[in-house]
Length: 247
Image (cartoon, rainbow, N blue to C red; front, side):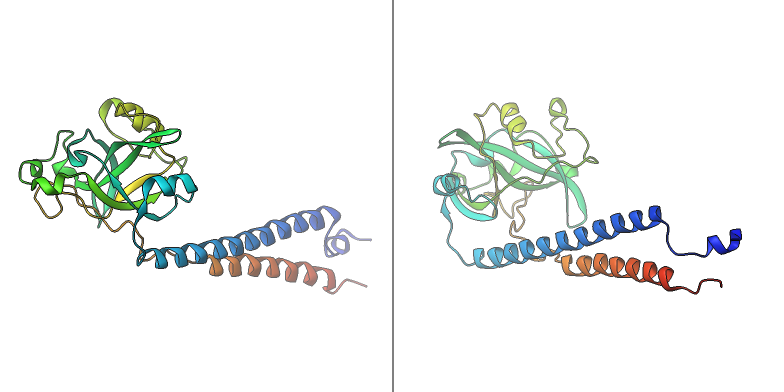
């Protein structure tokens, strides 16, 4: 048998093994995206229903353990005047900081809950109470608030480390934030205010709609892509098996 004849034969044992491994990976990724699709559809349905539901008691929600995208009502004395941390963020294309504070609660093992007061443009960033505090009507500082309870996003490998000594945070490490603020052990979720106490006044943080209106849902397209690549791999393998061999 000539070298040329050997070169045009079908896939080798090693090639077959590698093809099977690649095929398994591609199919697994496609199935995973289908699971993600089901999860995302359930989440979108939950968020759509949440927008018309009245807020629930914070203590009751924490006790239930359902802490992802739940509207809650809570009380926090001097909410906007409490010490704050700066979490780097971007809103409407503008860089700045989300202002985080801690409110005392009595919810089992949790003695505090972190509250996102809203977004402050970078040019206005200042760790002292915002200028609007002097002009906010007393009733707006009652500490009664409504927000959305949600779990923090996990820190990724590209997220810069937090710098507590400079009051600069890049991820919501709730336990570290609570310690820095001198608060007790925090709940495993934080609250995003639906409206800041000083909303509309110069120098006050601006709350954004914490219930996302346009969560992307591209998992079906991703699943089709992975399954398509798997089908293409099978097609190439079959073509190699049945390609014309020399006499």
